[in-house]
Image (cartoon, one colour):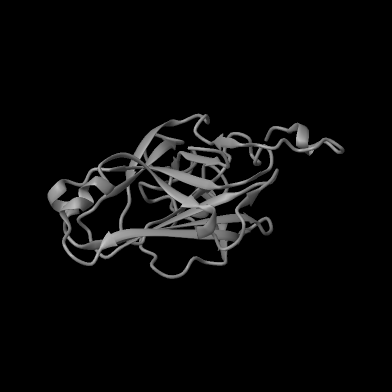
Length: 227
């Protein structure tokens, strides 16, 4: 993990206006989600810690919609929850903040196709968070949960992944779904089908790798200036 100037005693942290995580290494990932998908990943895989201080006006997750006009006109709702976790101790993470956004229609609506198709960003604004979305020079993990009452609208996360396919484990050790085979601490899937409230704590041992979302890190843009 690199040492930032802000980690040196007496050095002020940089005040940031915009930041993105997609400069880290890894192949391009466009991975499907489903109802109840709950993936977790480090916010800053390259730096290790958030490289400054910022109160976010906007927190955006890159996504991609492949729904046809016919499919997306069927009545449905889609909710996306985002959770920010910090390190509680050496074995688990603690929930620090969360936000939710939802869209859809209770009746068939032919205009809904314009809400999904193509490259998109799922946006969470400051008023949607449970508390002020402030970030500083520490480690953060992100949890993303997707909930829908319909299976006809696939939403893909777009970003990068650590490996070309889901992680199989360490060389010399048989394929395993255990938490001991994470490519990075806190990277994995809490559940492929989790529709309950966001957990207040997540143990590293609860994260699994046997899922296509397990090695993916969506591109995220955080800013407090204009779009």
